[in-house]
Image (tube, rainbow, N blue to C red; front, side, top):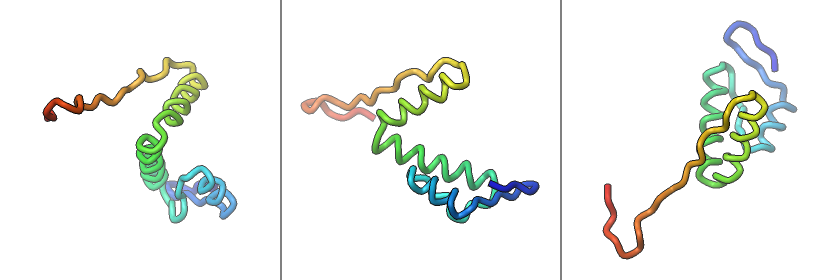
Length: 85
């Protein structure tokens, strides 16, 4: 990655490496673009593979020496009960 002021540039090889992880950095030019691409990836990962997202969060916390985030669970209504909003 090359940085000049607020501008970022990734080499084609770097873009391809991120693409292998499911992160689309094609066209990313600023820090805000990087944050948007990572937010999209995180949202998709949270929907498709929440177990993997949790493992990543735990390892990132461990690497930074902080407590991992609390475990989140999704609670859905009982099949026979009416939905609540």
